[in-house]
Length: 116
Image (cartoon, rainbow, N blue to C red; front, top):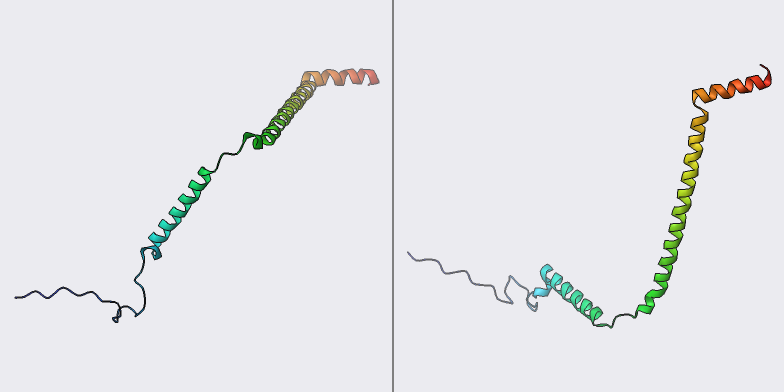
């Protein structure tokens, strides 16, 4: 018995591939496109790294603004803390005045003053 011969590849110009068409490049495939994108990103990153660093003077206005904002926030925190303490003291005073013994004493005093 003889084995059949291996199948032959289609050549350009045959029925499987149109005439005048170039063979597909590896850059036309999705993997090739991703490779091309990665290479261009790498080149852009290298170009950014090759540029001299910006002088620190460019950051001075930002640092000054951040310092001013931090001071403002600290002042706001202090004001909120003071107001919270005042509020707590007021609530404690109201709670004390509404305790049954204190309320009874004040009502009795008021009734005596009015002559009831």
